[in-house]
Amino acid sequence: MKISEYIQNYLSETAEIAKNIDKETIEKTIKTLLKVKSQKGRIFFLGVGGGAGTGSHAANDFNKIAKISSICLSDNPALLTALVNDEGWESIFKRQLEMHQLTANDCLFIFSVGGGTETTSKNLVEAINYAKEIGAKIIGVVGKDTGVTAQEADACIITPCPEPSRRTAHTEDFQMIMDHLLANLLAELENQDEE
Image (cartoon, rainbow, N blue to C red; front, side):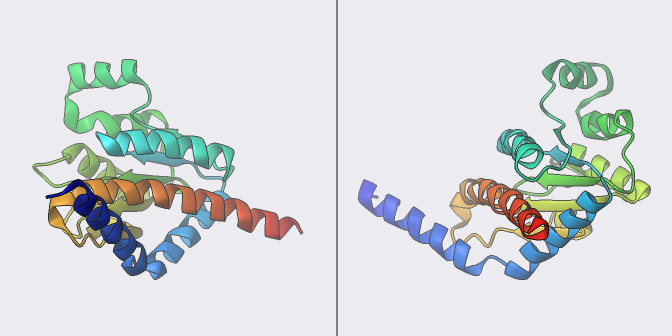
């Protein structure tokens, strides 16, 4: 494949995703976040790999721009590695939610390509199950509708990827886009209320 062809394909696919992404689910996500904010709840961002990086960025944006108390559960490497070492990879997010005393006013926000299954990213599944027990809200931006996040979330934005070989790249692109869209829209809505 030529370089110019790859560039054109990638950007065309990106435009197609933006056109076809489910706007009603984005609106449902905003309404869920507005409820969390009105209840003075917190957002806990979860993800592994690229999703962890986006979660860290999103915690910054939601604290600073959207003015919602937000924590990324992969941002403390000392705690993360202690939990992995002492208790195992599968419980790293659930245990932190217990430490932070997750409540029904709070929200899990998951960035994942697959969304978590019993064999891949089970740490997400354990956190989701715990959040369901507590009654916390669950939001996700994922690349597949087959994972636990898509099945269990109150609102889950699924990236409609036209090219399966680039599913991870496109999903992670749109996780960042959704972070910026949601945080900035929440700020705009607050500014309207103040006028």
